[in-house]
Image 1 (cartoon, rainbow, N blue to C red):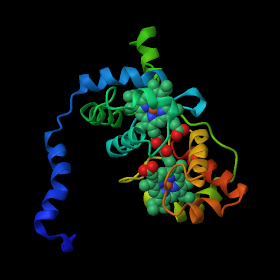
Image 2: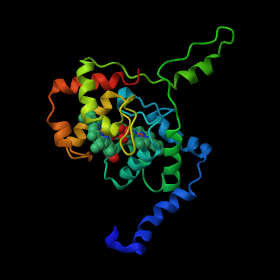
Image 3: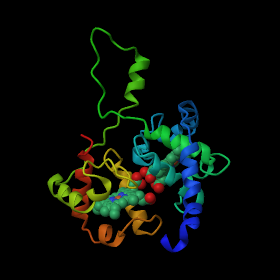
Image 4: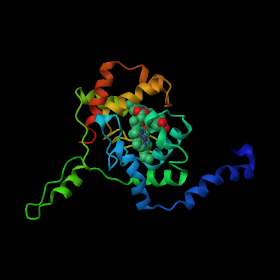
Length: 219
Ligand code: HEC
Ligand code: HEC
């Protein structure tokens, strides 16, 4: 950057800074845009389709918006989302709103016990149930998986698995979805740091143990 000189540096950083400053979160707009997403990702961004549609709730806004931009530029191919991730359907102003909206959703891992003196009606209870996502436990040696995770993944995906900076949460995500993404990284359809070292050189047993551990991170 120093080689560019101060003026080039200002020009280079200005657009990003300007966008961050003018962005004003509008929850109602977020909710409205989310109706489009809900058909696949669920009304609370809890995902579904047995993991064909990933959980989005509670991911960082930065990660969500980053992936949406990659879908738009087709740097990351996502055919089911093509009709929803273009400039007409999802302009940049909407993109930042929906990313913020989804990042703020806090899912539960169990349905709260009802207060026997103040029972909820069926509709309220159903609403509550839609905010619950508990990843089913995968078979495997969770202790061996924990060692692998801590050694090779925790640095970026966080010790608790809920993500850090640009690296998304793995905890609370569908294992089916995560496995597919590893295949995409290995096939060069998505980019990830060091795919050969991190992903290719691992036995099926190591993977099974790793996913077993990741699947209990949300317990
Ligand atoms: C027709 C179904 C469908 C709709 C509607 C849809 N998505 Fe998706 N979305 C998918 C699928 C399928 C994937 C996973 C693609 C893959 O396997 O790589 C995905 C992936 C994503 C991801 C990447 C998640 C990750 O962990 O990397 C984000 C972010 C996302 N969708 C946001 C949205 C938003 C925001 C909307 C609404 C504007 C939306 N999607 C609407 C089907 C849909
Ligand atoms: C050097 C940092 C780093 C390390 C180490 C790392 N990751 Fe990642 N990972 C990332 C980043 C950054 C992304 C987001 C990539 C993108 O923008 O598409 C990611 C994305 C992923 C995804 C896609 C998740 C989704 O929601 O689509 C999976 C799965 C994943 N990593 C698994 C792992 C596993 C398993 C390990 C350990 C064996 C690991 N990663 C180690 C940084 C890292």
